Image 1 (tube, rainbow, N blue to C red):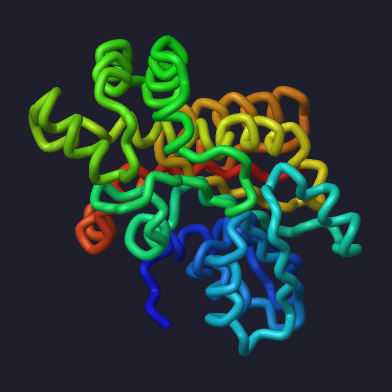
Image 2 (image 1 turned 30 degrees about the vertical axis):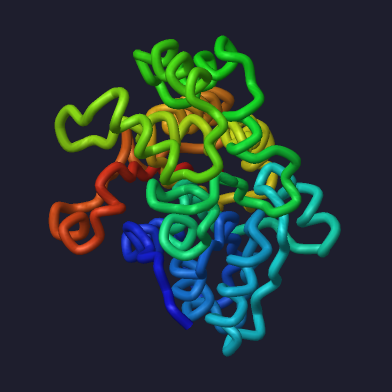
Length: 287
């Protein structure tokens, strides 16, 4: 089985989770099982919940970790953790990991429109999600597109991008959209002009910020006393939500921060895995 994704800050996260052989852990964004496989190997007498909203990638992880009998797999979004834990009768967790990044499988192996070269323009992380990026790009009003690009992509030229797209649509593939934006906007520096547009579409289509916000309201209730929550974020919108939530937890006396601000991957790790370059880790311990 081909593995696309390399887990980020893996050793550091394992250390912060303070794992012993009978720990109860959760990887709420399992992906291809990079972090999960390390967790499972450290808890021979423990339990691991592997959750992901993408059924296809969860099946890949299950195939990868078939040697472990102490893993429970659930296809769902992580804001439903409390309901999931109650349904499967799981105890409180000693450690929870959430990696908010998109797996390399989605960029390189899924052909869903996350890559600038894809022939699809879907961008759904779950096949049963109601709306695709193609629908958004080809049917939404210009003003609504501009708002999406500005809020979810922090694109300062959102109105220009929206106007150009509406004037040229329909777009039926990610490649078609990306190539058009290069042609109309041009390339300035190393960043592809469609980068923020693609980010905005992905976040909007998958309701990523809304789901993260709902998750952060109840996640601490699923930790045991002394339990640790590790969250990896990859852009400022996500990190802002996590930062605000963690400050709130401390203010309410729910626990402490194990990292005063954030931790980033080393230069050596980024050199080996360029996808790690924008990662930020925040860690909270329940008191």
